Length: 440
Ligand SMILES: Cc1ncc(COP(=O)(O)O)c(C=O)c1O
Image (cartoon, rainbow, N blue to C red; front, side, top):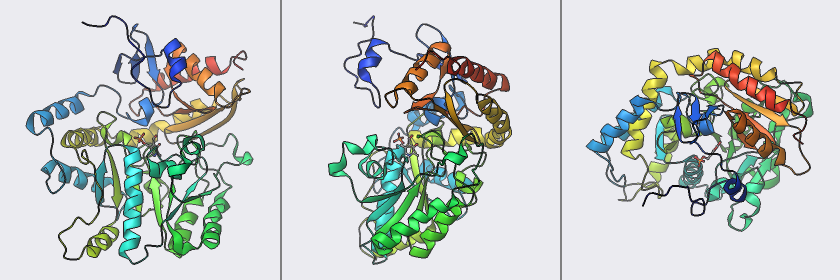
């Protein structure tokens, strides 16, 4: 029998106050372009590309057709000792837009899996070099690297780590890069490059020879778009090189044009040793993620296997390089290239950032940050941290705008296919809701 009403009890929703959601569910039934539609038919503009997933907008027929064709041709291939041509085609296509030198690609299905895979590649590389004692990682306060156990250990957003401390691995955190004098700064702040010296201090305090790698999001996304100070990433690169650590950029949000370049590594002209990507890899249509690294790192790991008949890396997933995900990714890349969407992101960025920085004097706004097509709006906090963020997120939904909220920050990251008028409508809704004084 077809249920007439949604039963909210069985699905335990992720990162959700399930109790509040059941009281006032906010649901989407359909999506097209940069618009979601509620089951009642209300239009809700998508100000965050879902969760930073859909730069080409929703409902792309090219991706749907590619997925359908792949499902009907080869719906699944195991990738342990077997493969299908489509994954090699995708890896080669990616290598053409990845930063130079990062042309070896390992596939997984989520950002969290990519992060944990990158950690293992890093550990495996050091062990292959005879430096198996390098088994500690460095990451950064306010960082987000997914929710698997490796990523949970790297987490700098402490709520994501606190309850699971018993099973996390050894990670030392650098300070985050936001400073008071950066308030209301668009683009890269002038100050704060010296915060990279935390890495050097950690190397001295813990012994660089015990550290495998340092993970950062080039722009810290989930915390609310914290843009790296000028010179900061360059300094991390130099310190990592000095002490033999691998530098890992987590580009799960910043990849695929969000900064105006294909990847933030290219935008900021700093090449990491490993890079993670997900979300926009398939324009959000099918779960897929990847880790890119260099031939030198791959060859070191391969060499350690010698001429034994064993996998070089004891790691992989049932859905690694799923052919349907590969087909979706190839179709998404065709759209990005065919419609020049990374260039469009760069061209649209000044318009977008002007609209965001126009929200400066509103009652609920205490800071604005932004780069490319991503921005953070820091809200005046209520008594309980995070309460204002969820209040505002709900009010925005009711007013016709979806944006991601984390704590008391909103993260705005529209699709690159947004028209100027759609961006203006998003800003209008933000202005109306954030101007309310009665939200407290
Ligand atoms: C930088 C970063 N890394 C990892 C992840 C985790 O990705 P997923 O939710 O697909 O596991 C996210 C998700 O937002 C992210 O922003």
